[in-house]
Length: 218
Ligand SMILES: [Zn+2]
Image 1 (cartoon, rainbow, N blue to C red):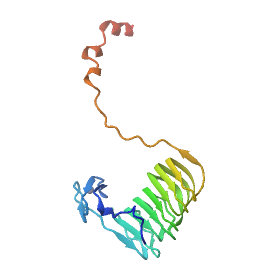
Image 2 (image 1 turned 180 degrees about the vertical axis):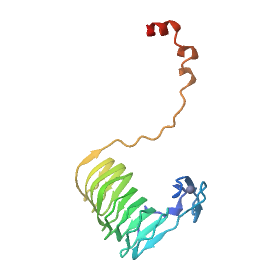
Image 3 (image 1 turned 30 degrees about the horizontal axis):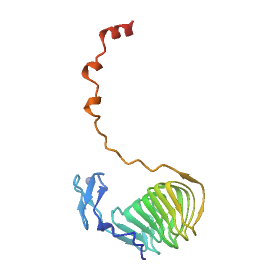
Image 4 (image 1 turned 180 degrees about the horizontal axis):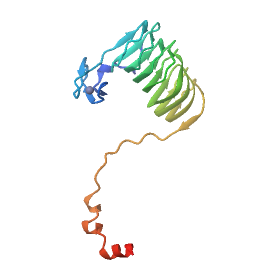
């Protein structure tokens, strides 16, 4: 399968990942093949997996996992950097990017930062999906989609869902059915700075005059 150019190999850029065992943040240098947690020393999997038959094996990786057209995954919660579903996914999942293609069948709930439904893909996702962004080139039906960022349906794509997003784009030639709520984009995190010294109350102002204290108690 040819992925659009917007999917560079995950190893092409440096990134930060959380250890699967202790949750500590770890920095992954460009093209790293193996990684051990700096806090607990346990290995953090960065490898890619391809599932072509029926699989139940436990997979927790920051690499790419592809469930092929004849593949079916029904094991414990699947964790991946990028999860490409062309076959059947029957287990819960947690990934950075969820890519669904033609003949994909997703019957379980999960989380993703970004969702891509490729041309020819026809998917029905269960439940409500919360993500940062969604790009629909194929057909998607889901109860609700909540995107902090952009939600786009491209020419030839179809989306049936109630949506909430800070930016909605429906191209000419795309189909959309559902309710739209446009929400403000998330505020960038502003570092907390100490107020300037001049605004700090002077020490003597904090002391309650004795008179006032007495009158207050009377
Ligand atoms: Zn760790």
